[in-house]
Each structure stands twice: as C-alpha cells, then as structure tokens.
Image (cartoon, rainbow, N blue to C red; front, side, top):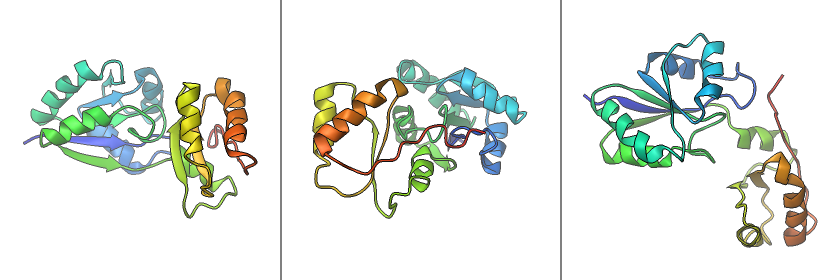
Amino acid sequence: MAGTLYIVSTPIGNPDDITLRAVRILNKVAIVAAEDPRCSQALLAHHAITTPLTSYHDLNKEDKTPVLIRRLEEGQSVALVSDAGTPLISDPGAFFVRQALASGIRVVPVPGPSAVLAALSASGLAGEAFVFLGTLPRQKGRRSRLLAQMRGDDRPLVLFESPSRLRATLQEIHAVLGNRRMALARDLTKS
C-alpha cells in the first residue's frame, strides 16, 4: 500500500505556533521534504523531532520528485514543508503534488499558520473578501500589468514582497492604483 504525502503548514515566525497534528505527522513520516533543510531542522529540533530531512525546492524538483514518489509508492509517508507557512502558497511543491496525485498517491493537507491570514487579521482592513497576489513579478512591466488588473477592485490586496524591493513596490502601487489604504506587516508572530 502506498504511503501518504502530507502537506504540512509550519510556523510563520514563532516556532510554538505549530499544530499538535503537525508535530505528530512530522514525527511519524519517513522523511521531510523541506524547502531549506537548515531552516526546517531548527523547527524540528525545537520540537525534538528527529525525522530525516531532504531538500525540495524549485531548482531540484525535477530530480527529487521521482525519488520521493518512489518512496511513497513503496509505502513510506512523506511530509512536504516550506520555510514558513503552507507549501504551494507562494512556495514550492505544486509539481510534487501533481505528480503524487497522478501516481494515485493520497495527498493530505495539515493546515496551520498562514502569513496571508495573519497579516489580514491584524491590518484593520475588511477581510470578507480579498485578493492574494502572491509575490509580485520582478519584471516592472509584468508587475505593472498585474497591478493594473486590480484597478477598480475595492477588495484588500495581499501580497508578499522582500524588504529590499518594498519602497519601489509601494511607489509603483501608488502610481498604478492611486491613493489606497495599506497595511504593512512583517514578522507578525516572532516574539
């Protein structure tokens, strides 16, 4: 019988913001496929989890996916984690999940912390409906076109941006969308 691929959400800052179920799953799987094993190792060590780690990211997905699928087909279970938050939500993993599903592997989400929802909940902006843009494209033309599609849309926009590009991105948002209420969030749960 094939193993299960668990998509495990990890804390977005505070290592204690992990679910009990996630700790249980991370303890029981044969291996944890991690975006950055060094980052994930710190989380696992914090919770006394000794499960082996392997790297899984966009640069090695073509090589690693068949190896992990083979392990799943042999009956071993695998957990996929990102550095923070939920895999596939602006993080690697979609290729792996598609291949697992195509191979008849059971895929089970283990929900938990969400940077998107944490930021929105602490922003004071209405959260009944919102648009998540993920990480904006680095190319100015593509970024401007994506933002232009949001003209006339009153819903809060949630996006990820690196600190080094933040000032330029805010200027571009203002240039494309005009005056708009904004909230900036960073390291919301770190203590």
